[in-house]
Each structure stands twice: as structure tokens, then as C-alpha cells.
Image 1: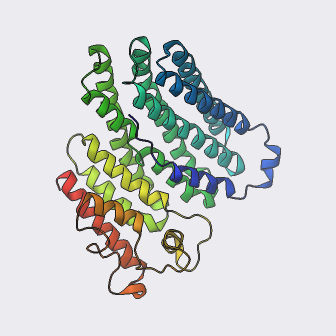
Image 2: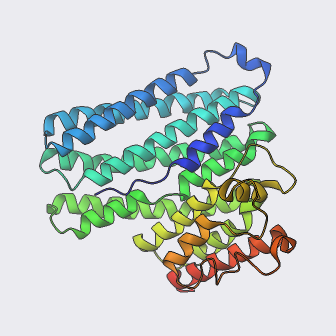
Image 3: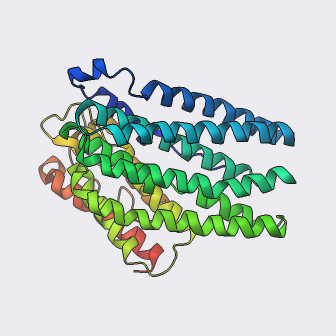
Length: 345
């Protein structure tokens, strides 16, 4: 059982951060820890792949060895990145710290995805160790996201929008661990002690994502203007929902966030700004405002019949003359209609 998320949004934003010209002082900052973070992340990825293979082969002792390695290397990457952030007070060092924190947060995401996907595919001591390891990974990722948020005041102005987008993608752009844990519990084959642990993990993971929407609301003005309207609609609906959002709905909500953020272009603004490039990148060079955004409207039409390309105004009669404001309004309206039904508003 696995629900691999699209990491395009985070990876594209990371590339955007790396592409931002650093100041000359970066040349004298070779010891800033970034190479060490990359090395730890590389080792963690390799260990995680070997862990998955061992679980599939039901080789418990080997699985435990590689899980330990993946956790240790992920934690080391985070610790080094956090140390970089503590020493950075602006300019190139802060940008390097933000990049390293993003790598560490992304690796925690991968670790969580694999552990929650594989916990019900092996039994015995390995299963129990995996279940006990999930909370620390959730907390580790949350700590990275919180620190990334503080970096917004320290990175160069040109990096603020990409960094805010990274924070949104890491914190509310995915609910893979929630979906995996929910399905593992629904299977009904887990031992009582493991089931109890995973129930606690599910609550912790769900609460972490729901609370993160409040954080994103606070940094919304720093996000690219093209996505502020749609994201504000999602955030407001989540904030107005009483109680815990069920996993299936939370997966839909975070999927919408991922679709929106994954379409952001940070290279070249053109005359139409961010959303104009979003259309150009999605539909081809000849795209114009009012032509529609297939990835978002396609998702909506599949989940909420009648809100797709024909009914949601994605190809409004005003054509290009309708402008970006009308297009954003149409997308926001579709999101509002979809989530209104799912969240009971």
C-alpha cells in the first residue's frame, strides 16, 4: 500500500531557490554545512530504498538496519540544517540554510511516506519499531517547517515567495501519511499494540496538517499573488471546519494545494505575471488567460461532477479579455464549491 505524492512542487521550488543569485559572500561560506546536509540526505535516500526492498522480502533484520540508517541520516541532515539556520542572520548564509532545511524537510516527508506505507506489510518486531518511529518523524518534519517559517524574515526579498511556497507545500501540500495510516488501520489485521500506536500517529499527523493551515494563513501575503485567492479559499474552509477532518477529505484538500503550488513558475514573469506563466507552462506557449488550467479543473471535475472545464467557467465566454482576475475568481469558485460539499459548509 502506497500513495506516492508528486514532489514536483517542492523540487521545483527548491530549484528556484537555488537559482536565485547569491551574494559574493557565499564564496567564502564553503563551510556552511550545505554539503554535509546533501550527503546525509543522499545516504538517507539510499537506506530508505534498501529498507523498502527488505520489507518486501520480509527480511526483518535487514529492514531494521536500513530503517535505523535512514532515520539517523535524516535526523543528521535536519540537525545540520538547523545549526546553519541558527548561525545565519541574512543574505547568502540564510539562503543556504533555507535550502538545506528544505532538503531535510523533504527527506522527512519521504521517510514518513515509506514508514506509513510499509507498516502493515511486515509483522513482528519490525512492525512495532516502524510504528514507534513515526511520531518522531512527524515531529522532526514539523520542527523543520517551523524553522523555515522563521527564515522568511532573513532570506533575500527575491527568495521570500519561493520559500513561502516551499513551506506551504511541505506543511499542507500532502496528506500521504494520513491516508496510509488510515488504510493500515482499516485493514483490521494489526496487533492491538500496533493498532493503538498507529491510531495515535493518525491523530498526530492529522492535527499537524490542520494546524499548519493557520501558519500558511499568516504567510499568505508572501506567496505569489496568483495563488493567494485559491489558497485563501481553502484555508478559510479548513479553519471553519469544526473537529477533525477525515483522511479522505484531508487528502483532497492537500491535493488541491499541491496542484496549485505545483503549477507555480518562478522563472521569468512575463507581462502577465505568475498566473500567465502558469497557463503558458501548462497549455503551451500560445496559451492566454481564460483558456483554463487543466490540472486543477481536471481534478475538480473528477471529484465534483459539473465543476470541470465546462461548468466552472474555466473557459469563460469573455476569452482573453476576461483577464486574470476573472480566471482566478473562477478557480476560487470551483474550489469553494468542491470543498463546501466535502467539509459540510
